[in-house]
Length: 161
Image (cartoon, rainbow, N blue to C red):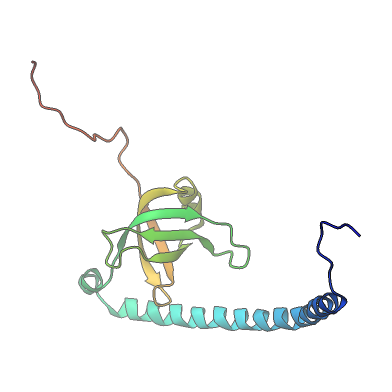
């Protein structure tokens, strides 16, 4: 036995082995339970989205503009979520939003918007859309692209010396 390594007690090694076998036995049952919970969660989200769509159709445009935020400004982060393929990324709103620094999962109305959003990974962006499922998802309808050309950051006074 190496004198520099501490001597492991047999009882401790048996306890570790028992813990590993117990956790390994619980893993399949836990995985099956979470799959059922995920399916139920997806169904609940679909029902909630249908209810919110019905409410949106009942409102006219003026009421929507007054009561709902339609334009979002902040940072977009692309993600590859294998569990929920509808989620394109996350969006963190900035101080111009009604609820600053809030994080949303981003879904798109059209698939071509996902390619457009991929160009803005890690950048500040403005999006048009609506919130779904009590503010969990941001359903993006359009990307507000900045005007081409360099941004003028500093204006100096005209004139010579």
